[in-house]
Image 1 (tube, rainbow, N blue to C red):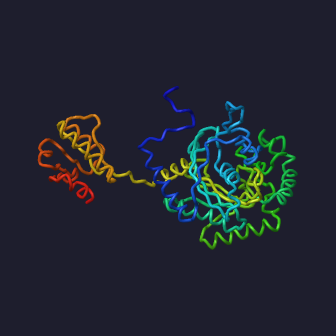
Image 2 (image 1 turned 120 degrees about the horizontal axis):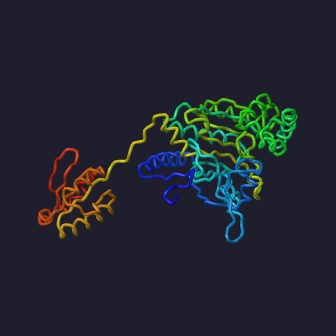
Image 3 (image 1 turned 90 degrees about the horizontal axis):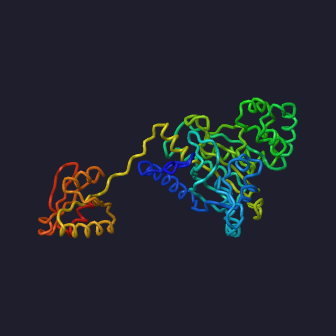
Length: 417
């Protein structure tokens, strides 16, 4: 067991890390173009933050959180999602007192205890963005637009945007009553989780993954039919703004998302390329979350996107991420005096910004050349006693086989070519 990673976790080896660097770089660059700034929050938070923010009726809080008591007898939880910690930070540091809106992005690990499956792990990683301080649907459309642009820049096709409105507390109360009346004759046939949701949050029954519950909810009244005037206008404004951005969408009244804090806009980018769990990116508006955890009334909107699922989707779509090029040079030394010059040269070149490697096993000349080939070094820079006496090195191009002597002082300029 000591040599096995815990179930639902994976090591990220160098052979895969470059793919993560690629998508992270794309995401950060796009967020910068949109005016989002990075925020980093702790790996764990007080458990109450997620109970109040995510909602104690959700599967996340009831079944999936990694919660423990620390030495100070405080209940602590590894963060299962990224939004609540960002909201907590926004309130704690009184960022609401600054000029609004506030636009954050983050890249973070999250933790949920659930059955591992394709693209879904117990430790997973998320890209996310949040906009605080505006109730304009333009912010919702911009959040969706960034997600769409990100997927497009990665070359991912066959991903459909689906949108819905989950209303506000006012119109949700009317829908809740109608939904309970519809479900009441079928109560005994619901799964145990949905029986509990019936009183706490019946709208979550629409989102149940159990086949029998899905059949029961198939003809249920939908939130779109109960929207108040304000929520109806917001939904129409969202659709207009998406159309103006040139973004295609499908209306899906069954989208409710898995977190209780959503109001009005709810959206998902969905694919069928990664198995049954087809949501690549999901998000929406949460106008009451900041107030719920102790801040002033400040509206917000954002999304979360799983990195593991994104990379799996890219793999299934046949999208290749180019492997990074090898080092600029491998320095090959022969002889103790030449070694001293070689070590000085390696450090000097690295400090000048070149990627240079040295054989730490100190093999013979033949072994060092094999090492240079294995790591894909562009050039082999050879320093032996003869080269040292002449005040230079022999540089060999691995691809062409050409070689020439280069004076010590000219090596950086030669490598730059």
